[in-house]
Length: 431
Image 1: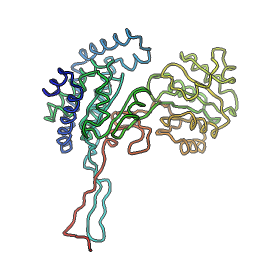
Image 2: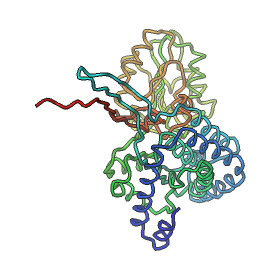
Image 3: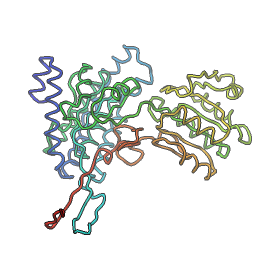
Image 4: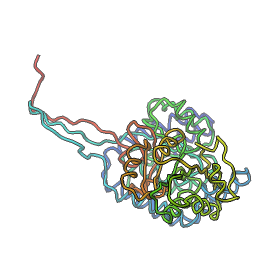
């Protein structure tokens, strides 16, 4: 934090403080755009080592955040998203190292051609500039967002939630050690030092043109506010209403494994399946084994009449359960008349995030993959693979469900734009 930012914070001048952070980020971004790969990778690797070295302090800070969340009555799924343990800290460190191993996108020539007049034209990847990331309870986003932005040559202004502030500060300290070791600007990654919500409003204005894009990562109310108020481009998804469709051609044992994992591995993430669709034309009983497997795993099942008949523990689904993001150990189950009705249901109730089909019929699978208009579609795999790390991107800032610029996991390539580099030998346009 610069002296000017500290002074504004002390004066409780949120607007002035945020503008100062914007100016510092813009200056850092100009240097990062020209930073060599070796420097960026060194910063990431040193930060990973610092995370490991300071794991006890990070967990101690996280315990303070968790205690406050529990005292505030936050649900268990919310606390799970907030919680860090040694294994999760190690996962964050490995994520930074994985980002370091990725190819540097900056300077990549995407296309090149020569015009008849001799002009040589290249389309070259360049950083976006300054990324504003607004997020809630996931402290790992501090490292993921900071690391990805850095690798792509961008400066980052991070505004984490008040519920994870102590943890985020501890993680940021490790990131800044990495920047210092690599002799990169410390303002390359900044964390808004106040939990005052006015800071979010200031970021949404663009900070006098300092911020080039906003990435919100959190609940529906946060994303709605960002999409409504932002004066700069936004990479966002509103909700993760994910579906798994079990087709008549599915291997039932595979289907059980996939469905239970897709719902129950981690119920509070945006890639968790919220609705199970089952083909009613399947030979034999698909409903009972699938519903029973979910119930036995501790999931509350809210089903249509057929699902209710399969097990007395199934509760009756209501209209609001279709198209609902539970983010908990709850799933809605519905029978459908084949793949076309499944696609129609997903089109009506889904959020274009992640949807999966389980089937051994390749033709049916290809129909689903082609016709379901979601950022991520899967065949015979859990929706919980909707994750940048699982896609080989090292990590992600979020899953974008829009159709402009970035879609799906937002990794290093999605945090770049391009420019045209034209080389001539004295050409001028004729009159």
